[in-house]
Length: 315
Length: 144
Image (cartoon, rainbow over the protein chains, first blue to last red):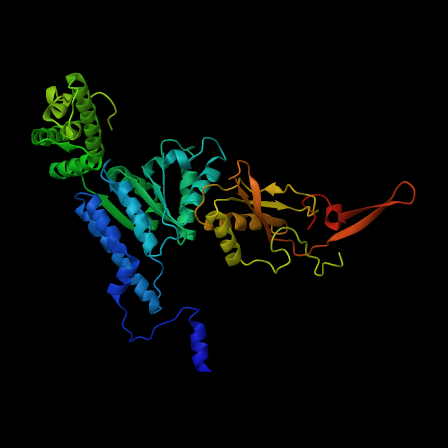
């Protein structure tokens, strides 16, 4: 009789006796997180501290799952995160991987990422904000809500700004629907710090703060090669040397956005390469001609000539 | 209606079954979302079977991945209208227009007075029949 009572207490789940051994390795394999972590290592250059943090978070969640088997109930860990760092340091990409990790560990049900900014959350007139924010939240449920440049939600200089309303709805959902969605706030470090200072409620609900460092020039070179490779281009040896010179020059200029600036520079180099091939009027081109970025394509940049930004899209 | 013991109106799916639990509602919504249908929540206090168009509780919800958001709206609607009929509908747009695919009641008043049958004597000795909801004798908002 007492036995059946005990079984009923478990609430459907099976509680393991204290001396049973659980296999961390097996649990790790079943969840397939290694695959996601490997992908993260492969696709993202550098970002050592970020990768370590992600690994730590994954480990925490995994251990938490094992603890559950012994009914060592710790509250579901707060998973809301803040990603701080300069533009182009890979915050969105990491958020995507994070959604995948959380999905594999069963902390979100669907594992999709809904990326929004202030415009998607805050309305333009009274009564517009709440339905707008709620609609976004409903879309993100079962996955991760990624709010880019989250500090724009709070505009202290305008007391009638509707951003505050949006923040309050978010806070409520972050507290009450913790099982339904994970919120990741992203933005520049200093502005995010100010945002958290003025919204203590937000600070206390965000447990994981991950800081994204800037890339070094070597890392940026590796990124450039990775990007070119994925587009089926490559540098000639001289072209590579030229680009290696280009990176530190570009880093000194204003509006430097890490990997995004590198991508834009490569786009312009491709443009010049196409122009060079076209202007050369060489009718017979080899495959090698079509895929190689020469030194001239890079050196034509105004960054080299008068230390100014190239015209055209720049961010 | 004496044929309907318990005086529960039977409209849409599952209406002869006991009330759906939230878990059952969630799995029905999951099925709708997996099929790519848009789900919406509607309410009314006029349960006449020919009253097809109920009031919308917010917009139909498009592009959702997970039932939790819809369940949240259902619970909001229950809080606002605890004594109304509330139904969940799923619309399929794959034919180029929105086609209702699912419709089921998720909330009903505590006491459902049901329908009366009224007879109208018309030309000759012929009789016209119509059903009349006892609840609609009272003005809107005070019916249940």
